Image 1 (cartoon, rainbow, N blue to C red):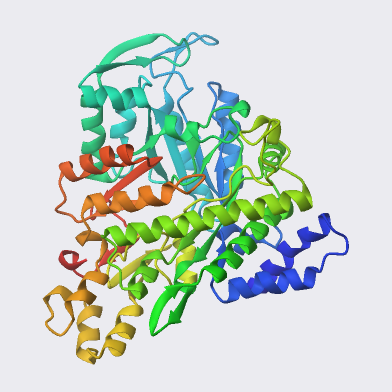
Image 2 (cartoon, rainbow, N blue to C red):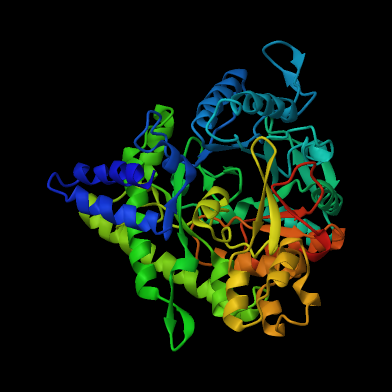
Length: 544
């Protein structure tokens, strides 16, 4: 697989230099993937060099207030899901339920009813696609149907193929803070239809996120302040996991560096190898820029804006594994400092490589409509360079912790497509136990069965702190970590605030307010056990 992908993606070099050493570039790409130091998103791994050749992970499809637009969107979504991509939509422009339909004199059914159409299309397509289709549904907090949207997933059978997020504005968050009201506005007429309590709506969001894991929040004004091409339009939605805000029809391809692989031994201790990291960042940016040229796009509109902006999203995985090797507890100021330092370095190097590529290949075509345009502009190849994705599939392939998440548990069961359950145990713990001299077969068996190492006298206290797991990490540390990575990420950061079953509504409230305060672009909270199916489950939820 890695050989096929490397050979295909390296062919883009010939578009810019007919004498390019494609064989050497292919070997470099292959080595980075085969060593599990860098991996591109799943559609690139699945489709590069194959019949589909659809390589992007993330798409945002516009849904305008007409039947033609809605069902063109359904058709395009089906194509994208068949090829392994994920889709996001804003339904905010659709007129509310019970509004008038001028062409027929009838009554509008509202955005929720049309979300169900997209959901059913996904259900049908995923049976024959390359992986399960995923959607993000977004509705602005000032849409008249917002309460129905917030509460729709109380019924677990509803919108099973959707994550949903409320696009909250700064004005709404200010009204929450002050205990004020705000207007609901009909998008068809632009007129206020009702004044409603911001705190009541916010509490409804908290209640439903606590009980079902949905909705999340998108801080839409903050996202648009970072929109690199504001002259081309506003950003209204993201991909399914929230890390990639995109313009209508825009797609993006992602890749991730395995931070567990960029460590070296120095005086008997692990330390970060920044020379190696720089090499991987530069290679990753070049690889992802090549993907844009090798991609086969589902429609001319998608191709036009994707090639016009050339957005890429280089991110990380294996962060928790790296912290363990460095002997730094995840829920600590030092861990946040390391996260900030590493992501700042990656972002800076990614932009340097984008500048170098611009000298070699030219700037992205829409640069004059971007924040990089003008007389004192910055000549860069890509409108964005960094994104922190959840790396669900990639982290399994690489055998590392996912994205910037802490360890979920030292042992857990992963449910994959078809209901198959795969037991797993963190591979670093037995390795550390052997190196530190406290390993025993009985201890490994105890951990494999879901035992809690905090109750073991044979495990040193500092090791217990380093192997902290998601449910034992206070809510604020989950959010703080997301925020420090967001400081140096062009797009957004996927991070789930994983909470234990006994977590309270106050915990959810705290996560939402702190994420807004600390500068995150969105936030998702999931309390274990609140969905009928979940990807990861612990052997013993008390000890996760």
